[in-house]
Image (cartoon, rainbow, N blue to C red; front, side, top):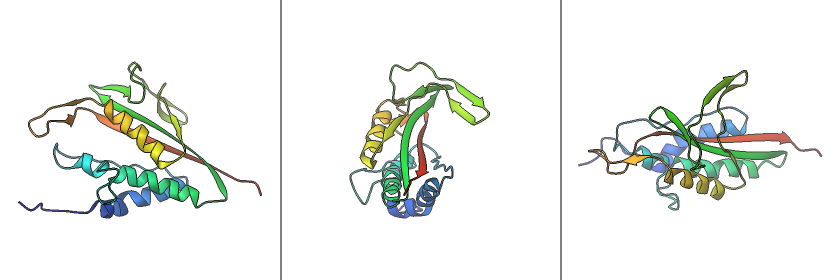
Length: 168
């Protein structure tokens, strides 16, 4: 059976995530969101096959793109941090700290945040991919009628890019 709609990973990245990555480097917030029924290809679209240039997904391509943009900007200094959480049974868990208890969502003048969520400084796309992969290992999964390894949670991988002008 031929799929109703088919796109290459590079096309999907170019149309959806590339503009978000560009805007993040410019200082704007951005979100890439995958939503749909079990078995429709969300995980493949987001992750793909990270070491395969044709089939790598949005996340590995975004990691590479962010660092390409950073490396091409000699006028600014950058700090990149990542965190990874999941929401499972209405509880927030830190996917990068297996011993973390349930975390609390907080709201203050600067915005909404998750108290005590661990963050890691990353210096290259491979660091980011390693953190993303480690977090994925810690996600809740379970079989459904449509997908034997379906995630039972929602996850949020956050990339924070800070920049400052460099002195001459």
